[in-house]
Image (tube, rainbow over the protein chains, first blue to last red):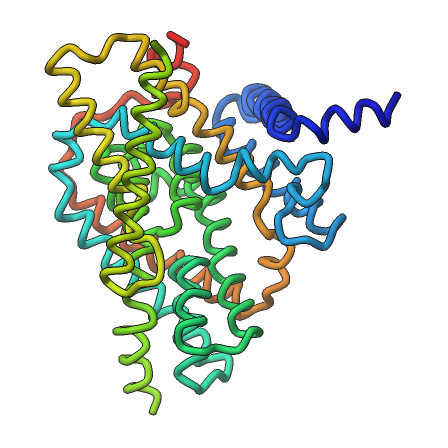
Length: 254
Length: 137
């Protein structure tokens, strides 16, 4: 009986994922209403539960994909994978008010540049403080502080060791998680209210996953504006990391 | 038909990712440059164009807005497959570098956003499920 149920779930991975995520949303909406009286957004709690499940899955299987490595919940990997994530993000563009987006165009580009430069400098400084002295390692760890994709792409391009690459990915992941969890809490301090503020946030906070999850948990209508800018973040980082930023670091270190 | 909307979304998505890859290759960045952003801009343009010509009945719109409303559940699924274990095991370098850069960026965001003139405020506490677009489905 149990085996039959397991087989059903395994053979219908994506459908199982829909049911599981629906359940998580139900629980978090309930918790949000009853425990925090709506003060903490249900989506924020759901994302936190998701991260908790990912931790549990990682401990259970020793894999890299959180709960998606548990064979019963492999469908979560498809549902939350890059394909459906990007598909859903693009769909949110349907709600963008063009006038608002255009008003913030220039400040968005400025935020984007600052959002690449600033984390890189901070990350590289921390690497320096912890005793890394070669330009390749410093650049790779600094790039990881931009996003967890920029880190390994940069590292691979300039030939960093796998240990440094792992560190760089970890830096980016921690950053994404902090942004996901911290944004709703810091929303008031960040003045996240208008489309323009969301675009500034998207440019500076980086990582589509962190930005979109953080905004989703703050005010869903802001998601498309933040995502529109954030999506250029990784590309810009991958462009600047192995070139300009690496050369600058090498010139400073050597 | 509802599939027209979803197909429009799919075409914009594919075209955007393709152009992003092309841009990445041309720039030598080895990665997709703004593919999703390009796709979003394409979809916005398509919507404006089709709205003006009355080629966008409500049913077609639903084919897109359903996926927009599915966004948060997809993000939850994404969170559930992050490599949280290795992120936490990264040690003090990863934690400190991430924390410090988030703080620096947060300061900048707060500073820039404070410079914005008091705009007409959005009513707070919106949710996907309370949106009229999501309700039609």
